Length: 303
Image (tube, rainbow, N blue to C red; front, top):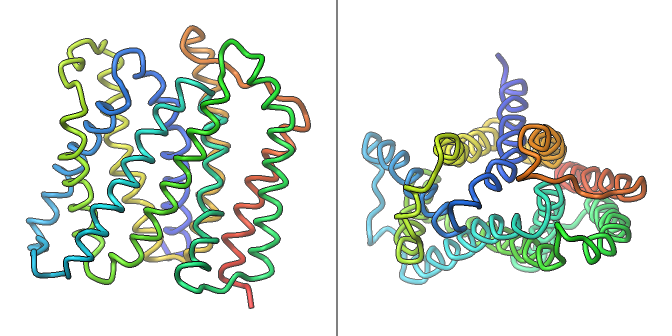
């Protein structure tokens, strides 16, 4: 199997994992709070990554980086924690499909941040993709905001929470670019999960785990495995395939969220609900995904 096929399959795996994740997370909200869910995922991921770090003798050393880099590491972890936690909290206010779609703001914010902080070139194609994404958002929310405001199932607070989540992820990604100069990707993952688990533990209520039903335990396990598989596939895909192509594939994650939510409504109609959208909103959603894809591809081909 050549690298192009491997890269496509890995990126598709990431899109699938990240796409269905909000649907599974929502199923846990009746028994666990956002902090506890995230803490369990971080502890699980830390345990998994620790095995690889020890086996490969790649344990990070205190003198490996300057103090300012360690401070940046803690700050970037806080941004990632904010992203994880707010992602779950938002599911209490709006549908998983809407959450995943608004998260497409993250790559746009990352593009702008790359220009501002790292003086990266913003190509004409990236600009076109960014404009397409923003216009798509306007079309999408032109219909969705009034519906959300009048809905008994959704609340406008969820929209602002997801925007905060997308911004936090972009800031984490910007910081990660600097951190990868001092640490290997394995070391960085190990440290982030360690710091995240330590910071979240005091805020979590692990005793609530005993309230989980049989199926909720399986869903929680899937969410933990999803953390490893999703990010693992993404990291590997970025290593063997062009970053622009990986990003373009991952941008279709909202499509998986949409269909997963449709299936979830059939299985558990008392837990899930369908976002009320008209034709214009669907058109806007398509523009958001297409804009994210073009912005990603433009990074490679832009002059």
